[in-house]
Length: 545
Image (cartoon, rainbow, N blue to C red):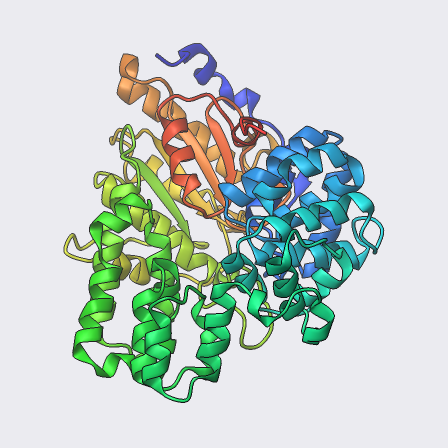
């Protein structure tokens, strides 16, 4: 049971807020490792509501300088890529390791650089000079050479998509030594060299997949292309410019993986694939394939992104399949040990894109509030006795319709608010409206930029603490009285969706701060509420190199 003596006098132990967040509100500074972990799970070097890309980079470099632990940096790079599914941050950490510890750099290189997109990002960062010398060191060059020689033909073809830098730039600077004529011809083809410079290799030595791709691009009819697609294994965007008509696009859709299919519904619509009712049904069936969703542990977030981005012209059957898929994916969200209060930040800053502003045409439609609403909806669906409290500077009353699909519920929740931020409100509402309800804890999903308390800007709570900590103390005392010997102590989990260096509630035995919006967050929430003493930093440090 909880230590009642401790909890009864925690008011006197409330820590004073000694920092300010980016919104100017009282806050607690995160320790360097915790702050760096938050950045690695949320940062993407694009402008956010409170910080531009340059400020993020400056903060990241400052935190890296403070964390004089290369093993932690190596584990964080792996965690950021494998668990948080980030692209830019793991590359930045790898670039740092290349300058600080080449042994660890080589140890984690293949796990961090697992595709051509991350390879090009790392190359770009090295060439920028922000993390060391602008040119490739011999150690870096060996790593790039190893990747280029070991990568499959399909992976190299995928890596050839994109520019600034391009794969050709990387090949020309890394100068890998080809292991045989097949790879020599492939490198020559990828760098646009004249065939005479491939010697002793010739066009005959090109891998079969490259020859098929060349033939596909040169084909004069759609029928020829469809026949070639039976053997060709290449990303759709390598074929798009030369695909001849809806039938070819339909054949390409059938070969797309689940992620590519989800992400390119508008493209398929534009190219006439959905004019065929049979193709509409085929795509819908694949999107909502229960076995595939459970096998690959897809979570609702991925389907919500597709749902938000689908144009009005995409058939309703496809959108219905996304709803169904999200419902199935909720089965991958864990059941918690008890009901929780879910605080959903719907303030103005939460309207910003979840991956930052990338400029016209490339900024995601998925906002911070959309992600927060989906997290809330997914937790509620698996834990229906919980309550959701959307908030900005007021707490909104919401009535949940059990018949709503999870995507509709998330969409509706995201439409509240737009004002300032008071992260204490969901806890305050639990202390007043739900004072007689038993809860396992509180989950706050926010960008953590609280600056209002009790309708007063920049106001402190008890003993100079934040408003959230003041209300949390009252929540703990209420729950101890309600649950008595049945309670091990309620837990507060603050999920931060943006790269920040402060929090409204510092880590301690009953409080966890976790950064990011990947699927791994659900597992961390469940483990902490179930009594796992591990912390977010401990999750990183548990990574095996």
